[in-house]
Length: 103
Image (cartoon, rainbow, N blue to C red; front, side, top):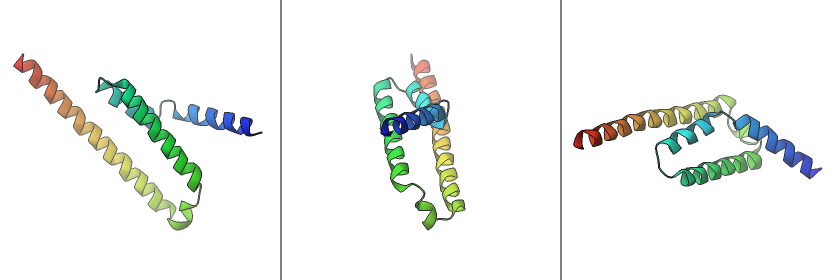
C-alpha cells in the first residue's frame, strides 16, 4: 500500500514538474553557468525541501492566512524571481559583449 502511494505521488509530481517554472528556471540557470552538476544539486535539493514543506504543512497554513494572502505571496515571489532572471540576462549579455570588444 505504501509503495503504491509512493509510486502515484512520484508519477504525479514528475508529470506536473515537466515543463513548469522550476524546470525552466533550472534550464536557464544551467545555460548561464558551466557547472550543471551544481545547478542540478541546487535545484533538486530545493525541490525536495519545498516538497517537504508542503508535505509537513499540508493545508494548515490556510487556517492562519487567507487564500488571497498566500496567492499574493506566491505572485510577488515569482515576480521577483522573474525580474532577477531578466536583469541577470542583460548583465550577462553586457559582459559577453564587453569580452568580445576586449579581444
